[in-house]
Length: 414
Ligand SMILES: [Zn+2]
Image: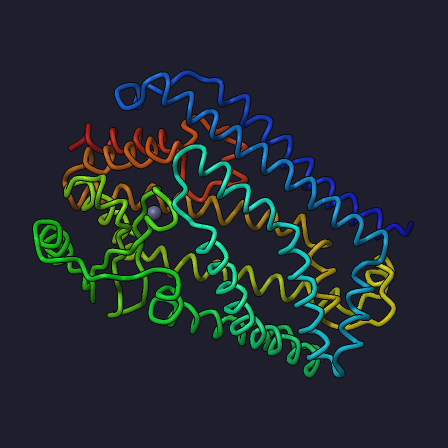
């Protein structure tokens, strides 16, 4: 075993160990009593159900994480990536086509490994706790559409990146970075028009009290929206949500039917005011900028590693290609990628507090958003007492109890 093999094994097993340890802390933190702000909203039975739901999901995450680590370690020690690479070389000629075939085989293998877990999650866990509405037919068509999209969007992106890295030796990473950024920007632009309707039906919200209240709020705050839509989230799950899509004048509001059915008008306006806050406070642009910077750092590090022979030797690779280098680089990159994820999640949680404050200020009604958040958490059996280390590692949103506390503070000063 080379030093590099040992180092990569250490990264992979270390990341999994950290993950397992933090999950354990999270399960211990689950033993706390019902938080004060939720005492009126959940009874002992419902609270116990939310704790059981967290434990059940945690168990699944542990097993799937374990299987993944075993799979990666086997790939490393038995030279399985080399076998995949030789298959790709047997099918196609040329770096780019071979590279795409290699990516295809690796993606397929990783999908096959994760498939049983996502079946279990949807049809056993979500079913048991009363969330699942996905039929097996919908599950299969969703997967197939996902694969098709992965091929249609992923293949040109991957081909471009491979080509730039191959053609421009020193600055290939810089040009590939520019290309990937432009590509991802274009995808964000067409997503609401071409991609999302493949998965959900968007129906314009009918005239009425809700529409009037939303338009009134948007108008008062100088916010232009091109449409308000109801989407059929209920065909997959009973969980509720709302989001924004599109840029510039093409901004659309999408409300899950499950949200509209369970919340009052002032609560929905509170939720939307939060979403509008993300736009008004430039959070969406800044998060996009963060992901551009992250991609740049990743591509630069990749360019340093691509020609590093010992990396290929560690994985028993006989024929070095850029595509193989890109996959192997991921493992070496584990610690830095973990740090960047933690920083980005921290930034995201900070923005959530800011958007809550924006909603409280502009609606003049912090209680409406509080009530909405409590309802959303109770209905989706959220963990009300996550451990701070787990939050730092996994949460893009702050724990709901902290959000309620912050909203109460604003209420007290109004
Ligand atoms: Zn938000």
